[in-house]
Image (cartoon, rainbow, N blue to C red; front, side):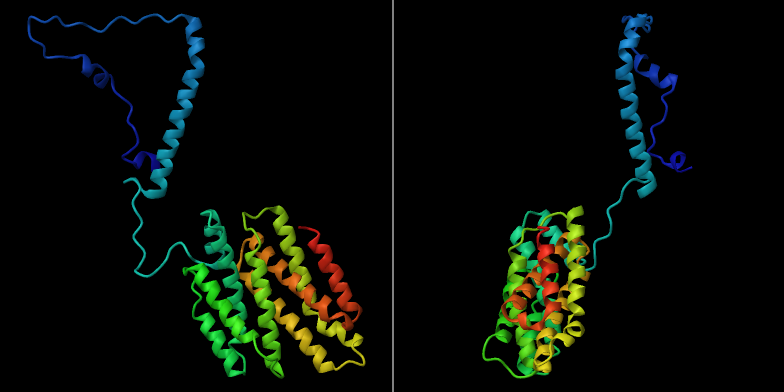
Length: 306
């Protein structure tokens, strides 16, 4: 058995070891005292000492269990220090979720929000880097070069925002480039909302919100096919380009959520994205018909969960 093989387990004291302290090689003129006779303990005193004895046994049992578990988990030789990680490899930062959660745990609330927005921007810029417009692709790649899981959140957020601003600013470009501009403009607003939302440990309610927001975002993805029948008399290409902007934002949020295993963080990203979609539709999308109104009603209902 593991317990009997471990050298650190305490051994039961023997009679000889108990008497050893009283044996002496004293000089002949000194008087040796034998062991004192046992003092009888009244029955009542024994009863009073029982709670203390029971507590002592429980404490000793707990210590013994800890020693046994220590032997099982780390070997009978006692615990050993793990080997250091290879140079340049981090053992604490394994994902966006772990980095944000660690910053929250350390009380670095502003840095945690900036890290979360940087993770969202990374998803946006990854898509924009594939643009056919050289200037958009170039700025997107510059922003992506700043993203590192163990980097400085403030610097990353600022650099990636700057890249998105360069894409969003200026005159509206034709064709697909206009769609990329609109995505960049909305992404900046989503990132701003993320950085304005306090972060904390996730609870049951956060999980409910995350699932509800995710379901609403999935409804946005079905919007283009549902709106087609309500877009009669309108330029179909313009309507489709507008809806594609909304679905781009939606896919970005859902992909960011996949990297975030904690529902509390997912809910922040999903909610900020839905709020931006709602604001866009209310501002310039009322002509798209009843299907968009249904989506607005769904988002309004979810926002009451705050």
